[in-house]
Image (cartoon, rainbow, N blue to C red; front, side, top):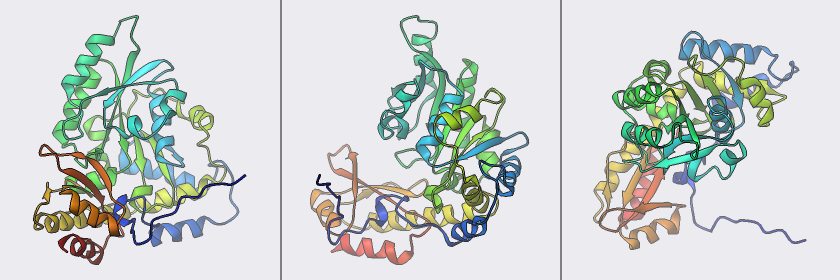
Length: 351
């Protein structure tokens, strides 16, 4: 049998395609090497003990969680913890769990109820609309939770006031709120908040804590922040969803290096500042329209000929069209995005 292979086109640089592209930060690699020793399996090790203590410190007394392999795993574990089979989860129509996680929610027995977004954000009124239509309706899936992304898939960041309003709206109708925090570090850094202030203090019940997009080798976590998540819920779900690592110590060591130190903030700040530099440079190019980024993602509308020029050199994903019909290109900066990398891209577009 002949297997096909997917090759990257010659001359294309993937760096700005996603912050998943960049490698692991040296401090993460050092943590992995430190964990490379004989140690108890399945989380019975000192690295994982330290991970649990770190969550309590960073997210508030009583916070607890488990390391997982990836963001999809974190999202599905978290949503199952605040839902039940055959219930529904309210999200935006751009939510990563809706657009990019295939049938994982379906396998978990969850129906997603996507709502029109405004700049990537969910509105309290849309939550109320779904609840009014579905709750108690025997012909509708019963809503049990709401999921939001921080940073959103449109590169925007919920303000503390916006998040508080959503959390209040969710709790007022008896639901739980989950945050897809694949880029929580970038959002918190942009808002000038610590991790507790960006989540627990605003009313978030459970968060998918992302390290991979901020310099991790491949480690994320599910973190419970409130008593709206029943105790002892996570452990069986972690195993059922194949997210229990026998060598949990390698995951825990990465998460400790990221969130137990200032690394999460340093990396996120570097990425956010690079995005601001990129946006400012793009705004100076004739024909390009760009909004100042909230965090590390830049959405730039540009004529087709500039898109073609960009794609001669870079992997660039299209993100719809603006009101004038111009294609929008998404460019994402990471902890490894240097001023030189930004200036190279700008030089390509400037011709």
